[in-house]
Length: 337
Image (cartoon, rainbow, N blue to C red; front, top):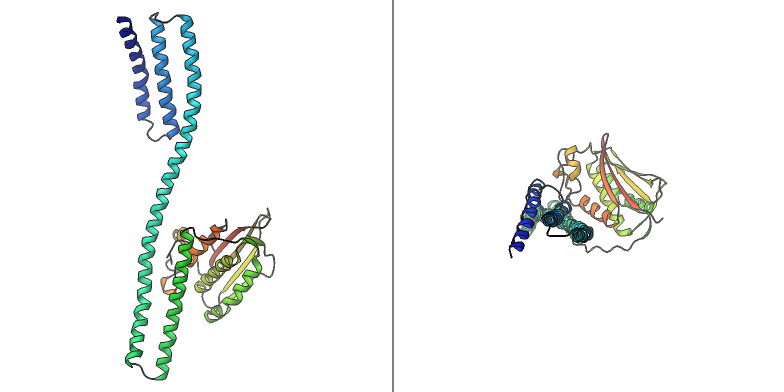
């Protein structure tokens, strides 16, 4: 019984000689990865076992042959344990990173939802108040002359169209954020989409005194859904026309990258540029910018957010950069090749 107690004491002392430095090492490894923590814990465990075995052998409780056998067994177990532990640690680290990213993404989405609700409440309240006042004036006969009545009707229709456009944008954005967007992708001639968009934007551009020009050729054939791509191009063109001053020009160009697997389309406007600090936020929901892009221009603040969502749904990318006296929005999409 005394030999058992003595052997236990030797093993305990050997384990403590390894465990204490191991705990101190872990204390200084707070910023290290999960894989590193698990590797150190496993190393401490194996070394503690080895310390107990070596201590027992030094006190002649273990023969030389038995010592070699134990060391071989511990070595084999250590190799297997390290392999299993490192594999599990990598999976645990990946799962932990995914969970952290998911929580951060959920926090960003929740903040975006709150901002969107507050913004929509504000933007809907103003036109609704105006429409109600005009409707009450017409109903009570406050305005009676034909010209004023006609002007009230026109303004009611304009505000109704604006609200309908806002609701449509909200619906599209909700589909994108909810993952409910289902694309039927096929070969789409980007030049045809651009041509149709330029034709439909011509009245607005003419009213604003802006010229819209599209490159005559070099357009790629991309893999995508034509309705959604039409909306991407339309939103970019309308945004460019809205922010380009009178007598300005909006230029639309496109082509293939050298690899031939990616097609691009760019819209250059004359907005005067976007502050560098605002460039990363251009595609955020309800962002309307400052100075060059002011809320007074009537923009809804959802168009570019929809552009980003639709482009990413096509497995593409969209970016913005300042180019001299304006901005360049560039969309890159996979081609059929």
